[in-house]
Length: 73
Image (cartoon, rainbow, N blue to C red; front, top):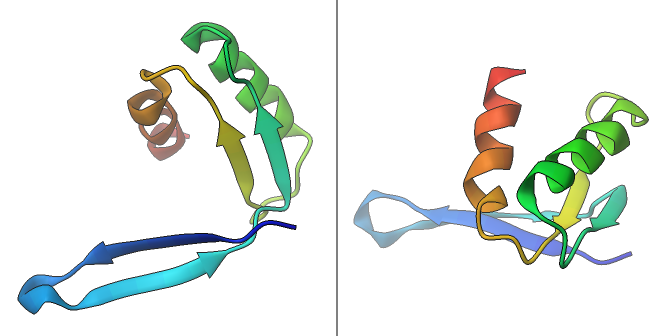
């Protein structure tokens, strides 16, 4: 299973990072945003709470759409 590094730069230049191992990967490269969102929701509906889904996409809108959608649900 692949590991991903996720982090952010804090005040003073300190870096806070964590290694995240996805429980499932959804490859939707080449698919338009609305279908990406639908497939993401379907996949998440089949996963237990607290599990990590990695979404691989070439659609630029999903960089903003998925975090916005997740924050509202």
